[in-house]
Image 1 (cartoon, rainbow, N blue to C red):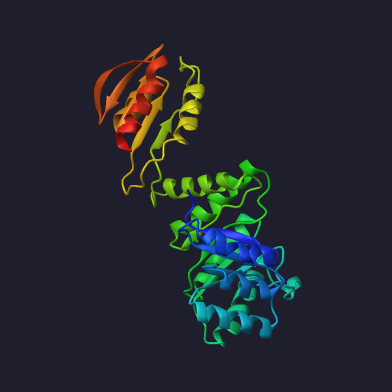
Image 2: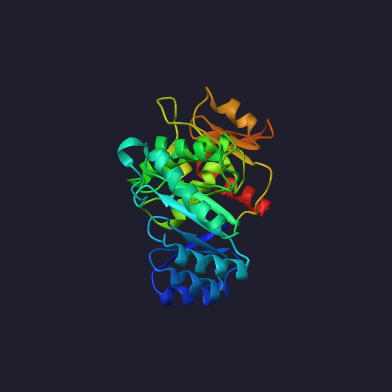
Length: 305
């Protein structure tokens, strides 16, 4: 479900692998380079679509100049990716982390601009939500380069998804950011799904049906947790086409809020005891048993593929 792929390049074998990977995918491939500038050249020669450099560990002007020369020839962009864990010491006792991230990026960009290269993307990633938001706000007022949003070293996966959602969501709502990456200590596919959920929650993109389901309480008379969990698992096998319109499905477990939410959805089920009332576009269509409800919802999705 991702749309850009970033690959860590640790050695020449990794750099050469771009040629083989390029034959197997249409997605843009970004080479993440650290310490060894020659690997950037090798990745470009083997088909990388973008190079990411960390100013904290590739900073010698002659090395940067060689990379920029190769970027110009290949006509591909450079991401200047500053991380809080590797930002160079810039008088840290008298400046905030956000200020150090911004200064580190802008000083590096100035070196590159002096080489007459402007095809640049900037990222400023910290593990703190507040530092990250502050850094992006500050740099967006100073320059108009595209911004790649994200946090780094976010902790436990659930915590990381929440921190990323807050920081990225705030910045996107302010009009800051062009690409995003959710960083989790977890499987990369979970990072992609979290990023999609952020965009869907803000109404910026749609990757599948929007699910509305209620928190369980004493009024719920069916096993709604199981039903919603089973539905979520099944959705991973339904490769729905991307759409500019949201398709909303409500799965509600009580008679208080259930009917109202179900009416507002494209398809909604409001359960009572064992059975639920099916709504389609705000109108009652029929009753559906709890046992058959999952199959019914899946059949509706099949019609949309």
